[in-house]
Image (cartoon, rainbow, N blue to C red; front, top):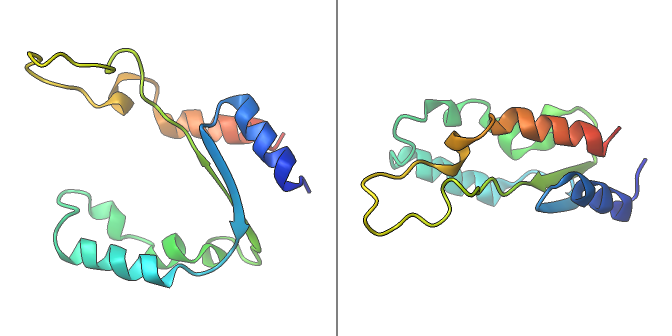
Length: 114
C-alpha cells in the first residue's frame, strides 16, 4: 500500500488541488448538522442528498473493513467563468462549462492508484 507521502505526491502529480489521508470513522457531529440542514429545506430540489446518509457519514458502511480514507479535491474554476464583469447579465457555474467533473475526478483517481 502507498504511504501517505506517496499518495499526496501522486495526487498532486495528476492535478488534484488537495489530498488528505485520515482514519476511517463515523462523522456523527457532521451528520447531525447535515440532517438539520436537510430538515430546514436548504437542499431545495436536491433530493438525492437525503439518500444513503448512513454511507455518507460512515465510510466503513460504504466499504466493509475500511480503516483509512483518502480525500482528494479539485478546483474546477476555469477561464470561462473567472472574473465576470459587474455588468454581466448572467453567470454560469464553473462546473457547467467543462467536462462532467465526476468523470474527470474518477479518471484522475484511477491515475493516482494505477
